[in-house]
Length: 396
Ligand code: TYD
Image 1 (spheres, rainbow, N blue to C red):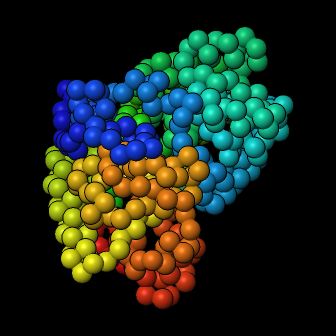
Image 2: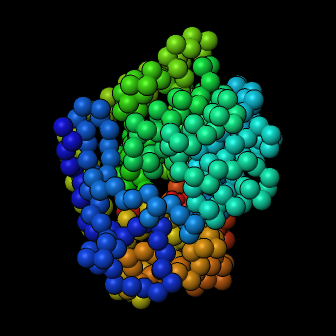
Image 3: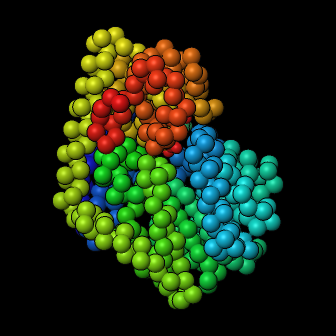
């Protein structure tokens, strides 16, 4: 049975930055209802309403993996691990974005899949074989015809963005060599619950995996998780190493059982846990609004730092407008001088002088806290403060 546990109200598409603030309407399909569900059988957490893929991932997709220092560094480290551990003849990346990972591999060993034309253009221009297509069986067959099979498939923050999980894993299994390895990484449901980061829910994050749910789903395809790594990226992610069950050359590491036990200890397999989460989310909203209102009552300028997709969920759920947050700063070129979806808050190009206009920055990109705090050492030294909602709204 699929049961609802959270309603984050009507929301716009999280990455649809507009040049002019527009009153969005349900009638024009500008808004959808963001409700989060729990499947009591598979234990999978998913969004109720799935947005058509072409509306989300098209040639205007603004997100770029290379926009932080953290992600390219993490990808460089991972590429070394993949080469050392699996030494692939062919690596396929599903959702290669601007090539932040794949650029660490030889061009003749790599295949990119990226449906957003603006991003696919970047890897193509660097000489990487890139399919500008959505991941599905048709594409998997095309790749198998051309390359026979691939021995490593990697996908970060993409599998959970695709509605038909059955089709996803079937297509992966079709092209993966018998002793091949699938590596996927996505935000961890456990971390989301612990951090009350309800902003992990937005239209692109159709699913939020736990290792419990993922193991259950993989069974259908005779696939299994044989290793798990905990990552700091995207506010706490898990990297799953997956193989065919019949592949006995790769041992299932103890870490897999440990992670599943940890999730069970936190009762991620029980619906009641999600009802408690819902209460925490409501409290978080009230507290964040109070902090912002209090600061505004003493005429403080508040600047948002990092216009993440997650921010769209927070601002729309908490009904925060430019009376509470003056504007955002962000390093992404495609977000510059546009408005956070569903709000009248403009995003300006990151500039140190802008930051220094204010004593209070709302940490939108909380998942890059370490990188940002390092970058803004001077701001902090001179008494500047950050407002964060993780794990509970406070000024730090
Ligand atoms: P991110 O949290 O990776 O993703 P999502 O949009 O999926 O929630 O987005 C980080 C955003 O923060 C991205 O728009 C770039 C921006 N950013 C800055 O503006 N400055 C910084 O120093 C960092 C680290 C990120």
